[in-house]
Length: 73
Image (cartoon, rainbow, N blue to C red; front, side):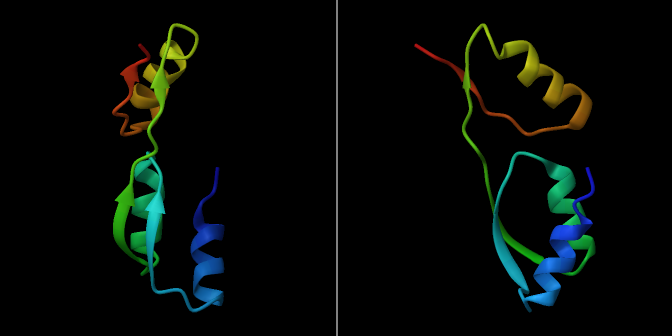
C-alpha cells in the first residue's frame, strides 16, 4: 500500500501534526519524511486468540508492526 496519499491529503488540508492511531511503523516513517509531525503514536490494542495469532505474528515479522497484543482470557 502507498501511504504517501495520506501525507498529500494532510498537506492539502494544512495539517502539520497528528496523533496517529497505528501499529505500522511504515506509516510513521512516511508521514515524518513528508514533514508531518507525529506528536504521538497511539497503538491499536488487538486481542490475541487462536484464530488470529498467526496473522498477528506475520504482521509483526514481515511488516514490523508494533503489537502489544495479549491473549484473550
